[in-house]
Length: 298
Image (cartoon, rainbow, N blue to C red; front, side, top):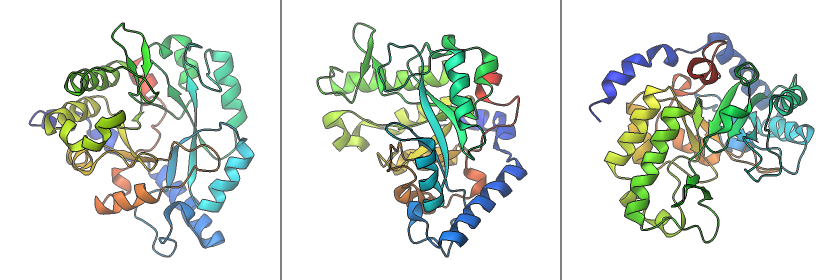
């Protein structure tokens, strides 16, 4: 963990906030709360707004429409960031954006809707599907580590039944390497579903996520200005991971990984942020033009 001090200094420009964006976010939250008198996404905080923005950056439109989702955003007093899967058609999802034309149509569909526009990058070859110019029109890019290289090098979805990831100890070594590889090589803004573990390993989270393994992931995230999602769907990362991330100066965001109607339900994320004593300054905001990860790193 001693190496973090060097990288934290380099990350300082990224830690400054765009004041106009903060004011806009606060206005959105306060207006929604005043109008509705309830924050379903953070129940119990309607009269005592938390000292950070209520934004769910991990919302999928699967089996819904943008208009349906916008209704939930207003109801729950939570601004949404919509993400669609992006990469080659080998990635099997209801929708996968695979070229500039598909990305441009997606962006146009969300234009003027009052949401942030992002993609969830799939596998390690997604950058080759798009031009830098098209990707720069996004507000942000997220990814996770749950699609993992199997023993033959082919992509394997760790959450699927029958996924063969070897012995737990061997898997963890490769898994942490995979986290670092993604952070080092892919121009992402947010790492989501952070520290998720497959199957029986999840029950021994604190055994497998040692301080040394946590430190390697955090060091790579600091080097490349990647924010960490506090996930209400998986209730992750664990508190040791989050404490280390905060100490390292990393930024955070909330995410539900929600499909209709489960987006914007951020109770666990909000409660966890309060335990960590996070404020607006600790939170991710989409970067200014020229500072997005796809612009800095491609």
